[in-house]
Length: 247
Image 1 (tube, rainbow, N blue to C red):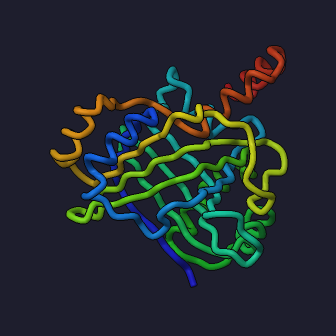
Image 2: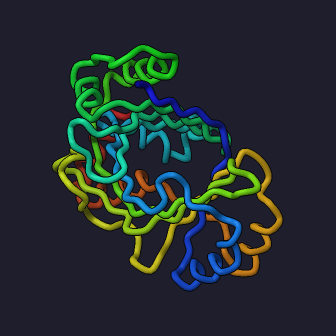
């Protein structure tokens, strides 16, 4: 059966040291409840073109389209097998507001769709994803990216979610969800990436706790960070060729 997720929200990111993480949880832990996945390892295949058009548009601050960002990915919680449920997602960001659409299917169905365009079912969200896939000339799995996550929501406002990610790693070979959890780390071991996701204003108790622990917003994209790290290993002349293709 199709599993649908639709939402519109704002997201703010913060990089925390271990000490800040412990101090923050001591202050707000009592107001949070683990979500359905609780502690898990989130695994993603980011879909992109051969010239990495989607992520390049996303990080190109000089391009007017940077106010609009779009990502396509396939996600699982843990290492899946062919029958496991996975999530095919399209995530759009326009002027700091995030719009996310996702559908659930088996890994076998998802890979069949990515390989030959065979939709496992028809729905409005599936059509939105299919439109984007055609728009970008059928992007393919380009980067595997995973991380360990603790996820919580607020009892007083379930739309308020906090996630803490560690062990963020990526790879560009064996780009399959079923091939295991490993890769090159792109975040220091002592750091936690906090994302606060809300459909409205942040509650006072949370802003107060962030202020008291000296935790401030930052800009951090997992996929963009992985892509920029990948480019360090690409010869300059090849980078220039990609730039010409992109323009």
